[in-house]
Every structure is written in C-alpha cells, then in structure tokens.
Image (tube, rainbow, N blue to C red; front, side, top):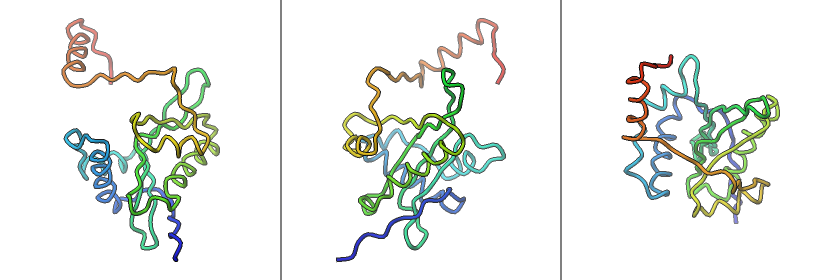
Amino acid sequence: MTSPVIPTIRPARPEDVPAVVAMVHELAEYERAPEQCHLTTEQLTSALFTTAPALFGHVAVDEHDEPVGFALWFLNFSTWAGVHGIYLEDLYVRPAARGTGAGRLLLAALADICVRRGYRRLEWSMIDWNPAAGFYASIGAEQLSEWVSYRLSGDALRELADRATTAGTRPGD
C-alpha cells in the first residue's frame, strides 16, 4: 500500500488561478450554494496580482505541481491587540487530496506568517454543519461562540449606502 504524497505549500502563482477558481466553485457546491458563487479567473487574478493586493493566496500542490487545495486570506487588524492578523476567507482541499495533510499544511503556512510577522490571530468562519470542526479542534482552534457574524449585502447594502449620499456625507474611498 502506497502512502499518500504529502503536498507542498507555496504562494499562489498566476498560472494557479484557473485551478483555484474551479476549487472555489467546488467549495460553493459543497456548501450547497453554487448559485451564489460568481468568481471568475479575471477577478481572482486582479485581486491577487495587483500592485498592492488586499487578497493573498497559498496553494497545496501535488508531485506534479498541480494545485489540490488552497487558502485565500487577507489582513485584518485588532484594535485591542494593536496588530494585524490573518483572516482566512476560504480553505479547501479537493476530496482526492484529503487525508494527505494538505489542509493542516495550508493552515500551518498561515500560522507561520502570523508568527514571523508578529500577528496575534489567525481567524476564520465556517458553516455550522461542516465536519471540518473536528479537524479544527484537533489543531487547537477554539470555536468562538460568543461572537455572532453579521452581513450586509444586496438591497440592504444599497439602501444603507443611499443614506450616506442622501445625508450629504459621502465618505472618501
């Protein structure tokens, strides 16, 4: 019996973008919301590889340097701690590569960035029914039950934005 090949983790490159976009759509399918996923190769390329990116990515690659998993993340800032942290937007490993350590290695790469840069937190959210909760607990992640997520989008977002412009207070970008 052959043991699975341990993936290599590296920063995403422009040639990885089509595979990462495909995996984002696979993740949306897994999370039962494929109709909500509209990410394109052009959008992700623009977000990751602009002069001053606000989004960063790492990939887990197999022995042929083909992406089998990814982590897309950005910086946040804790006003209480006074330092940046990493917010993990999405982590995904293709089913065939699960059990190879790819997810743990992707998170370890982000933890390493946090430690080297003096960041105090690596945070993420997940759907409450995701079986990855056991994996996250096994690496020492703690569930924050006292925090509740909120989101403004669609009509509610536009309606609130309209209040800024009708009040004559258009904040700078």
